[in-house]
Image 1 (tube, rainbow, N blue to C red):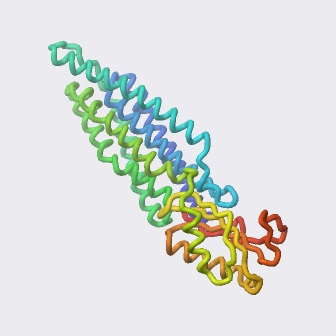
Image 2: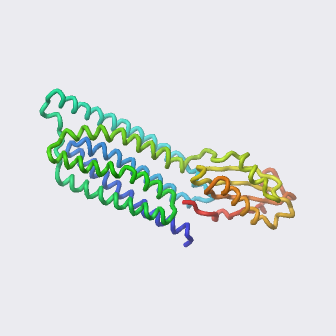
Amino acid sequence: MNEGDYQRRISYRLLLTTLWATLLLLAVEAIGGWACHSLTLMAESLHTLVDGFSTVLSLVAVTSPQRQMGREVWGHGRAEVAATLVLCAFLGFTGISLGLIALGQVGQALTGASDAFRVVMDPQVLRFTAAMVIINIALGIYSGYQARSLRSLTLKLNTQHFLTDAWLTILMVVVLLAIWQNQRWLDPAFALVLLPLVARSLWRVLNEQLPMLIKPTAIAPEAIAHVVNQVEGVTRCTRIRSRGMVGRQVWIEIYLTLHPEFIEAAEAIGEQIDALLRQQYGPLRTQIWYESARTHQDTFSDPDITSYPPPSGGPDWH
């Protein structure tokens, strides 16, 4: 097993464990919130749902290198779009509903209604929630350590997303303790605080992690051609494609026509091009197809066309 496969396997196992722990916490919060009529737990369950979606995106990014030719970088397809739209619609509808209920309870309390706050905190629900929060935070800290050790971008982004709001989850447990001590007015009040933060958390996921799977061109073909044509021996550079995000991960495919005198040095030319592109644009993976100018065809249909690196090779930047 090479180093890249080892890194992906460890990252995959950690992310899968994180996903299961997140789903368990989600179940405890959703069921406990419904049973105890706690708006705080229900609002926090929406936040946990966003964390689960973040982990799923990271799992897709980690497992997608199994696809050939580096197409994992632009594997943003119908499944990701549909899941994102469904999640946004669900969070929007549920969040607005919880917000209206919370505002209604606050309004009733201001008018002097004695039964405005309907939450009844069950000690068993509180214990389960606190235990799962501790487990998830400990797992997040360990994943962060492994992300630095493995230099895994996907694991790092997922861990950063989770740990950024860890303080909020701890504060939620403190609020639940206060509610258990008959400070029931905190339930709708803290829910109103949580709901906007859920929207912020979702935006952060869509802005930082979903782009790892997007399809648009990462680098202008003209810019890549300008760099490639500086290498001695290259006579023509065509069919340039790039996907991903500059500075994070980019996949580049290039078709080169080499001068006949340099065809034997094709591999060295490929390494030089890869180094120049990395120097210019940061982490990337190149797939370079080349042929001699003597046998060049515009369709690149020659069966003797070779590539650098081989389709299954190339550096691993996850």
